[in-house]
Image (cartoon, rainbow, N blue to C red):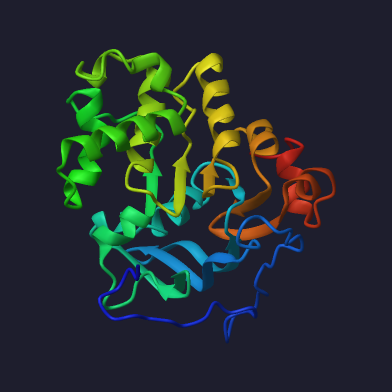
Amino acid sequence: MPMTAEANTRSAASQGAEGSNREIFLPPERKAVKDGGKPHVTAKNFSIFYGDFEAVKKVNAEVLSRYVTAIIGPSGCGKSTFLRAINRMNDLIPSCHTAGTLMFNGEDIYGKYTDEVLLRKRIGMVFQKPNPFPKSIFDNIAYGPRLHGINDRKTLEGIVEKSLKKAALWDEVSDRLDRNALGLSGGQQQRLCVARALAVEPDILLLDEPTSALDPKATAKIEDLIEELRGSYTILIVTHNMQQASRVSDYTMFFYEGVLVEYAPTKQLFTNPKDQMTEDYITGRFS
């Protein structure tokens, strides 16, 4: 299903954008994971501005499908801004605009004919704080499918059950689907938000510091959930917790002051970083 009204089939580039002084990051490991670890998101000389301020600076990178990619860096470095750009959540900020190209499956995310609603169906997002709707657990999960035209009760029941099982929440809430979702614990609410995102069958799941508001037990359940979803979805997770990044991800991006400084397999980046700035950050020499 194309995300544009008119198919836009530009292929993902494998070289740095013309005029860029940084080469495109191509993760060296391309083990077969369902679809062969093909590029799912490609940034070419991609920048994000708030007014005149360049918050993300000329990023050139490929995100491989079906892997978990962590995005780390100090506060204000552009990591969440970059993540939100992938499903155009930054469009909600009036002063925000972009330059360069950001592509999803070879299609221009910021192209003239891109349907933002369809894009956000294919690229789901979970935020820092759980944000369930003040509705029943069932209606939270069914909201997205209904928005896209599914109204048959039995079909919705199947989607709700499947999504809650994927989010490892079904066993805890199956007997109270009609109760208000706001009555769930913080960790349960966050898994509900994951289930709500999965209900519309996205290709990519964006997680913006999904455990920062949770206690250690709830955090562990979210990390276990990421492990369960690994290989079925392309997952990008922004996290301040470097131990978490090392535990859950296959690849890691390190941003500093809007620049993608280093992007490598997680084990390599944490044990043998190529850039001194990366080493200084992961060893705690600056924050």
